[in-house]
Length: 293
Picture 1 (cartoon, rainbow, N blue to C red):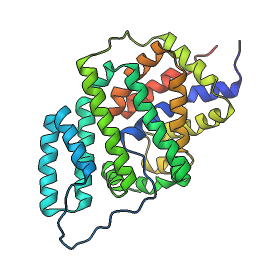
Picture 2: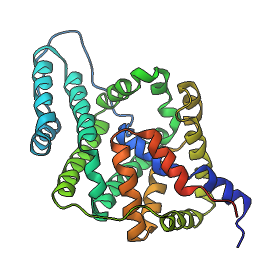
Picture 3: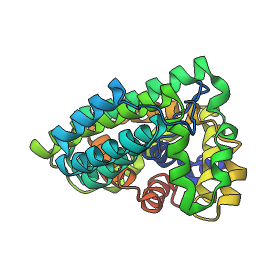
Picture 4: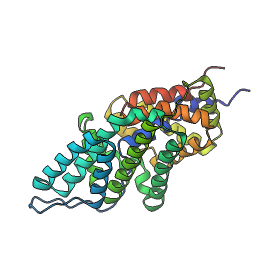
């Protein structure tokens, strides 16, 4: 049965929400308007917060090599740095752990995938209620003012400067550590992705309703901008609602049957957490692209 041209256009461009929000996960895009840490040039003693200590302990259990480097960096920051430096090196360690252990997510269970998606949705739902202005891509636009080489350090500094964002990022990272360890210990074996998975994902997208189609067009614009240049991305990101993207992601994932859901996330999540954004975007475009009738 022929589909409407608007629906075809939306799906053809992608419902890129899966990849874009995935990138938001891997880049810690979860910031809110809490009071920033006060930084000063005066030397005062700095100590690890409870959140930092708990994450360092979790890292030691699940990723000893990364934890050893973090311990050295924390000790140096305690001696010569600031509270902001302690947070910054901890966030950098979490990114390192993502890269080291990302492939383990290929064999995670559907329950693991659901836990990660629901944690993201819960955080973004709370943000949309408590500080909706920060759901707008415009709130992140200043971060895009830096060049590509400085983008990740600038984003880490932004997260480190906000209490709630830092706590959320470390909680998310601890969940990742637990899941990758469990997946490595008890791997789930799946077949390769298939045309059936693509068909089911497209049908799920088509069932989302008109509001989600508008969101899909916004996400598609971001997808087209990604990988071009940062000036274009700065312009496009202003029109994107990050909270809606996260909630749409959870909605899609909840509706997928177990088989396609597992194979799709096994394909995408390792690449997202490894920072392989181009591949993730390419795969999502392929999943949602409607072949000519």
